Every structure is written in C-alpha cells, then in structure tokens.
Length: 449
Image (cartoon, rainbow, N blue to C red; front, top):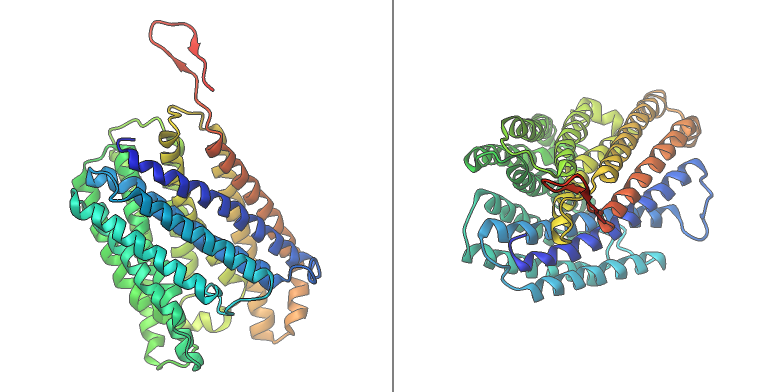
C-alpha cells in the first residue's frame, strides 16, 4: 500500500462483507421457503425476505465498487484521495440509508418496484452519496495521472450514478414505468457495471501478472467498446412484452446476442494476461478469484443469458426458474466474485498481513463457486420443466410448483454450500493469518500469526 488515504477502502470492504453475509443468509432463508412455503409466513413474509436479499446484494456490490475505487485510484493517479473525510461521510450516508430501507421493509413500507423498493428519502440519500463519491474521485483523478483504468472506471461510475435518476421516475403508465425501470436495472448490470468490472479486473491483472500496461489498456478499450455497443441496445430484450413498439423485438434479439462478446473477451483477457505474465505474485487467491470471476461471468451472463434471450424462446421462458438460474450465476461471476477478488488482493495490504495464509480463502472460492454452479444447473432443469408444464401444456401454476419441489430442495442444499463459503471467506478476510516465512540462512521458519 503506497498511500495512506487508501485505508478508507477497508471501511467500505468491511461494511460490504457484513451486507454480503446478510444477503446470502437472506437468500438461504428464501430458498427454504420454496421448500416449506409457510415458514415464517406471518412473521417475515417471502416478499420482504426477497427485498432484503436483492437490496443487500445491490448495496454491498456498490460498496465494493466504491471501496475498490478508493483503493486503486490513488495508485493509478499517483496521489492521495482528494478528501478522506468526504469518503467516510459517503459511507455513513449509504449505511444509514441501507439500515433505514431494511427497517422500512420490516414494517411493510416499500415502493413496490423490484430492486427499487427503497423509500424516497433513501433514494435521495443514495443520490447524495453518489454525488459525493463522483466529486471526490473525479477531483483525485483530475489532479493526478490519467490512465485507461481510471478513465474507464470513472465512465462506468458516472454513468451508473446518473442512471439512478430514473429510479425517481414512476409514471402511472405501466409501459413507461417498466421502460424507465429497465433504464436503471439493465443499463446498470449489462452496460455500466461491465465497465467497472473491466477496469477493476484490468487493475488486478496488471498487479498480479506484471504484463505491460499498454497490453492491458488495448484489451480494456476493446472490451468497453463491445460492452456499450451491445449493452445499450440489448436493453430491447426486456422491451418485448411491455407495450413498446414491435421493432424492439428484433433490435433486442440481435443486440442482446452480442452481449456474449464482452464477457468472452474479459475471460480471454484474464487468461491471456496470466499466460503472458512475468510476475510470480504471492497472492494466488486473488488470482484465483480474478480468473474465476471472468470465467463464471462468461457462462452466467454470456452463455446462460444467450440461452433465453431470443424472443422465440423468451416468449415461453420469461419469468421462470431459467431466469433465476441466469440471474444467480451472472451476478455471482461478474460482480460478486470480482469484488471478492479485490477484497482478497487489497485486505492483506490494508491490514499489513503480507504474506498471508490463503488456504481458507481458496477453499471458500471452491465452496461458493461449486455451490453456485450446482444451483444454476438445478434451476435450469427446474425452469425447463416449468416452461413445458406451465407455458406449453398449460398446467396450473401451483401444480407445477409442487412438481418442482425436489429441485427446490437441491437448490437449498446448494445455497448451504454458498453460505458456508461466504462465512469462510469473511473469516479469512477479517482474521487474516500471516503465513510462515522461512528466512534465508535459517532452518527455522519465522512464526506467523
């Protein structure tokens, strides 16, 4: 760690990991309700649990992005963060807003729009926090060295913050409502967040592999171009059925098939950089998470997204467990694993624990990734059966749900593995143990913590 102000990133990472724990536990609870539908139905209804699960996911990922920016921008810009105080104020606003949103959900106060259920005051709080962040990080970059990584990161963060304005627009017309809603949800996860992902992945690979910066930057610009080209018009694959003009059926089908390309490029980029790398970096766990993130993102967002994006397929599969399979694997690969890669790289430096014991961290990777892969296969099979029984044959919804009970039980088992991996990861980060180091000329290792 070269700059003192980078320490602010640790506060973001710790808060993010706390919400990560809440998010996966909420998901596990929701998974059990699929198996036993009346569980906690009076005390904590399923719709409230689901809100907490999805909102905690969004907020902790954003906290991870903000923390990653506060860690990598000083190194890239070669100067301290413009204002550490502003960074802590921003974090306080976000955490107060998060706790306020959860509290309001628990007493039945929410906006009702999926992912955007936050009360109005919380939405304003998020906007204020985003503006503080953009001012703070932009002033840091403008006063320091400019690189492709900071340029792309800033572009992604500026765009995702500006798109949040559409969360305030809630027209009475359902078609317009859904259109503005997708401006936030799709253009976040399938456009602007991809820029953030590409920038953070490029930074990690630059540090972990030792590849020349020029090579990294060329790849980065190509990935950004394909992400924006496909992601913006790819929004059309959500516009098929919400009352927008019919041409969106073709625009959405064509451009959403191109959305596979940036994820394939990111996976190729990661492996090519490791292959070309000259540095034998001691943090193997961070490299594992980086490669795992790009690979799982390609399959989750790319392959599983493509499976049901064409309108001829989506007509039958939309809103089934196939959507859930795609959503879980793509979010895990593209954003969850990437944030965990950044935590794994940065936390030992922030806590002055290098070199450190990485075994538990690597075990957590395989537990979470294996659990998520199994969950995806289970939900894919469940969704295929659901599509046929419900959308083709025309069986009643609840009869179909009863027929899928074995898949929901297996999904819960996969969720247990994911939660176990998440808890192990958090432990490995917060209780970072130093590795035993053998000093030259000594037969005895220097005892680590």
